[in-house]
Image: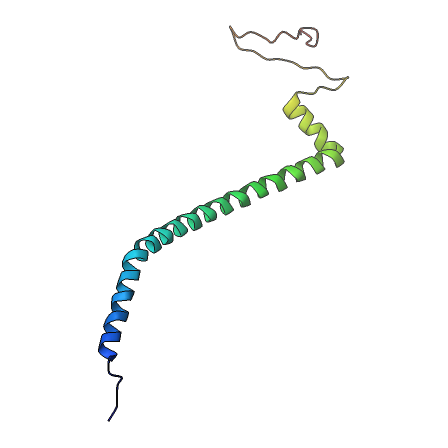
Amino acid sequence: MVHFPKNLLKRLLLLSLAAYVIYALLGRRFLDAWRYHRAVCAQREHLEVKIKRYRLQVAKKRYFIRKLMTNADFRERVLREQVGYVGEDEYVIYFREEGEHLPNTEKNVKNF
Protein backbone atom coordinates (compact mmCIF):
# COMPACT_ATOMS: atom_id res chain seq x y z
CA MET A 1 0.00 0.00 0.00
CA VAL A 2 1.19 3.51 -0.86
CA HIS A 3 1.43 6.00 1.96
CA PHE A 4 0.80 9.70 1.25
CA PRO A 5 1.78 12.57 3.54
CA LYS A 6 -0.95 13.62 5.93
CA ASN A 7 -1.80 16.98 4.39
CA LEU A 8 -1.34 16.06 0.72
CA LEU A 9 -4.87 17.01 -0.30
CA LYS A 10 -4.57 20.33 1.52
CA ARG A 11 -1.20 21.02 -0.15
CA LEU A 12 -2.53 20.17 -3.63
CA LEU A 13 -5.52 22.42 -3.08
CA LEU A 14 -3.29 25.31 -1.98
CA LEU A 15 -0.96 24.72 -4.91
CA SER A 16 -3.81 24.74 -7.44
CA LEU A 17 -5.28 27.86 -5.81
CA ALA A 18 -1.88 29.59 -6.05
CA ALA A 19 -1.58 28.57 -9.71
CA TYR A 20 -5.06 29.94 -10.40
CA VAL A 21 -4.26 33.25 -8.68
CA ILE A 22 -1.00 33.58 -10.63
CA TYR A 23 -2.82 32.84 -13.88
CA ALA A 24 -5.57 35.35 -13.03
CA LEU A 25 -3.03 38.06 -12.25
CA LEU A 26 -0.51 37.39 -15.00
CA GLY A 27 -2.58 35.61 -17.64
CA ARG A 28 -4.03 38.79 -19.14
CA ARG A 29 -0.61 40.40 -19.26
CA PHE A 30 0.82 37.32 -20.92
CA LEU A 31 -1.90 37.36 -23.58
CA ASP A 32 -1.37 41.06 -24.21
CA ALA A 33 2.38 40.54 -24.43
CA TRP A 34 1.88 37.62 -26.84
CA ARG A 35 -0.40 39.69 -29.08
CA TYR A 36 2.10 42.55 -29.04
CA HIS A 37 4.91 40.12 -29.89
CA ARG A 38 2.96 38.77 -32.86
CA ALA A 39 2.23 42.30 -34.12
CA VAL A 40 5.90 43.26 -33.82
CA CYS A 41 6.94 40.09 -35.68
CA ALA A 42 4.49 40.84 -38.49
CA GLN A 43 5.76 44.42 -38.73
CA ARG A 44 9.35 43.13 -38.78
CA GLU A 45 8.57 40.78 -41.68
CA HIS A 46 6.94 43.65 -43.57
CA LEU A 47 9.99 45.87 -42.99
CA GLU A 48 12.35 43.09 -44.07
CA VAL A 49 10.46 42.83 -47.38
CA LYS A 50 10.77 46.59 -47.84
CA ILE A 51 14.49 46.45 -47.04
CA LYS A 52 15.00 43.74 -49.67
CA ARG A 53 13.14 45.86 -52.22
CA TYR A 54 15.23 48.95 -51.39
CA ARG A 55 18.48 46.96 -51.53
CA LEU A 56 17.53 45.74 -54.99
CA GLN A 57 16.84 49.34 -56.07
CA VAL A 58 20.23 50.44 -54.70
CA ALA A 59 21.97 47.59 -56.56
CA LYS A 60 20.25 48.58 -59.82
CA LYS A 61 21.21 52.23 -59.35
CA ARG A 62 24.82 51.33 -58.56
CA TYR A 63 24.93 49.20 -61.71
CA PHE A 64 23.48 52.10 -63.73
CA ILE A 65 26.05 54.55 -62.31
CA ARG A 66 28.94 52.14 -62.89
CA LYS A 67 27.81 51.56 -66.47
CA LEU A 68 27.35 55.31 -66.97
CA MET A 69 30.90 55.96 -65.77
CA THR A 70 32.59 53.20 -67.78
CA ASN A 71 30.61 52.78 -71.02
CA ALA A 72 30.80 55.74 -73.42
CA ASP A 73 28.08 54.44 -75.78
CA PHE A 74 25.68 53.97 -72.89
CA ARG A 75 26.54 57.42 -71.53
CA GLU A 76 25.79 59.03 -74.91
CA ARG A 77 22.51 57.15 -75.24
CA VAL A 78 21.43 58.29 -71.77
CA LEU A 79 22.40 61.89 -72.56
CA ARG A 80 20.39 61.81 -75.78
CA GLU A 81 17.30 60.14 -74.31
CA GLN A 82 17.05 61.78 -70.90
CA VAL A 83 18.77 65.14 -71.31
CA GLY A 84 18.11 65.83 -74.97
CA TYR A 85 21.78 66.08 -75.92
CA VAL A 86 22.54 66.96 -79.55
CA GLY A 87 26.00 66.64 -81.07
CA GLU A 88 27.83 69.62 -82.59
CA ASP A 89 27.32 68.45 -86.15
CA GLU A 90 23.67 67.45 -85.69
CA TYR A 91 20.41 69.33 -86.13
CA VAL A 92 17.04 68.91 -84.46
CA ILE A 93 14.03 68.95 -86.72
CA TYR A 94 10.62 69.45 -85.11
CA PHE A 95 7.54 68.15 -86.83
CA ARG A 96 4.28 69.69 -85.78
CA GLU A 97 0.65 69.36 -86.49
CA GLU A 98 -1.57 72.28 -87.41
CA GLY A 99 -2.07 74.69 -84.54
CA GLU A 100 0.76 73.22 -82.45
CA HIS A 101 3.48 75.64 -81.32
CA LEU A 102 7.15 74.83 -81.67
CA PRO A 103 9.55 75.18 -78.75
CA ASN A 104 11.46 78.44 -78.64
CA THR A 105 14.72 77.04 -80.02
CA GLU A 106 14.84 78.65 -83.43
CA LYS A 107 18.59 79.21 -83.33
CA ASN A 108 19.06 75.40 -83.28
CA VAL A 109 16.36 74.58 -85.84
CA LYS A 110 16.75 74.88 -89.60
CA ASN A 111 13.53 75.54 -91.47
CA PHE A 112 13.28 73.57 -94.68
